[in-house]
Structure formats: C-alpha cells, structure tokens
Image 1 (tube, one colour):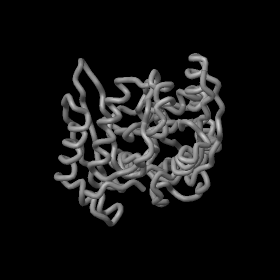
Image 2 (cartoon, rainbow, N blue to C red; image 1 turned 135 degrees about the vertical axis):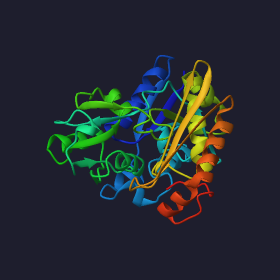
Image 3 (cartoon, rainbow, N blue to C red; image 1 turned 90 degrees about the horizontal axis):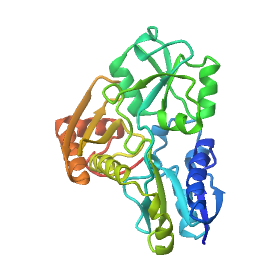
Length: 311
C-alpha cells in the first residue's frame, strides 16, 4: 500500500487528530508519516485571534507544504479552514464528528449562572464573548490563548474563575475533569464546523482521494456544509461573532444560528430546516443579514458583511 505523509500543527490536540487519521489509514495497510508544521496562528500567541486578521492563520503554511508536495494530505480542525478553499485543494473527507458544543470549565463554580458578579472568564473568541455577555453582562471577559493544556493550567492556577472550551478537544484528549456544564446551543451556539475534522488534499491527486474516501461521514459532511454555507453567506471566518449548528433529526436537516455584538447588547437568532444543506445555510444566513446582522458585522470589522472574507 501507499506511503502517505500527513501535515499537522504541533499542538497536543492537532497531533491527536493527525494520529487518529493515521491509525485509520494504517488499518487499511498504509504506511504513514506525520510532519509537524508551525502556522502563523501558532507563532502569534499574545494577541486575541479576532485581532490578528490573517486569513487561514492555522492552515496557510500547511497548504503550502501540500502544494509543494512535501505532504500528501493535511488534517485540520474544520473550523480553522476558510469557507472558500484555495482552487488547488479540496476537502476529501470529513470523519465522524465529535460533540460540537462548548463547555463551561471551572474549579469552583457549577455553571455560568453560579459565577459571582464580575467574575473573570477566559476566552479569545468573539462568538463566545458575545453570548456570555448576553447571558451575564456583569462578567469580565479576558483573553485566553494557547493550547488546551495551557488554558487548563491557567484555570487551575486561579487566573480565571472559569473558561469556555470546545467539548470536542477535551473529549479527544480525555481531559473532562474540569467540565462543570455542557452548554446547549440555546445558551452558547457553537462555531461553524466545531467538533469536525477536515482531511485536505491536492485537487489533482486522485490516488490520495481514493485512499481517504472511506473516512468521509455523510452526516458530518451534510451538517458542516450547511454551517459553512451560512458562514460564507455572512462573510465570516472562524473568529467572528457568528454561531451555527446544523443537526439531522428524524431525517430532517435543522440549522440554528446566531450573530451578536461582541458586547452582548444585541443578539440575533435564526433557524430553519430543509433538504439541501447549502441552500439552507445561505437562506438562514441571508435572514440574519436582513435582520441587522450586516450592521453588526460592519461594526466589528468596518467592512461590508456581504463580501465573504475570513480573518
């Protein structure tokens, strides 16, 4: 069978993801090598992601290695991939999705409502910040960058009363002991694509496409296509105050999405159902823009929300 080289970021979680795909490919008889690639987002650690403004900050250098044929496939967190993939690449597989929800982590407090007035909460996500501020305007939201381990260490050290993290990363790393509350989408609508992995290849590489095709999960492909269509329609990337979660329930595709001011003073929520994931995503995105989402995004970025871009 083939020798396949996987490109990955070097964090503990990224390597878990790469090794997960590696194990599945090795079961098919392939020999696998993993190349660790440092991305722009890994190098800029002292600034909130929403302020960096770099398109594909966690994927650009990995795609460069793919284009130069130093690697054969890349394993990303899907939410890090811009909604418009560069023309030379494609998402060949989206494996079975982990829990897409966010979780509330704390040493002392059982839930968001139990936090004392003015409590210090860590997150560098505008989406999480906006929804926290909607729920609890009194909370102090403070930047929190770094990998899962470093974020948990800061929580343990008492730097924060609580932090908000993705359930998927904690589940994959077996680090759920700090989780006090799993946040429903009504409380904290997740990021588009959260909990999903993307296996990216060169578009002209039919051999690798065939090798990884078995990894693709229909439900994960459908739900994330819907969420990413909404994000693309609204002109947002992974660091915008937009949340989206699509689910297949009783054979129906349902989408719930929000857009909010970072200070939480305005939050718009929209939902819909349909059969075509891209059409549904675009329809719900359009509805949010019409109701005032465009002005919210213009406030955040000082640009027209209709122009699809990713920070």
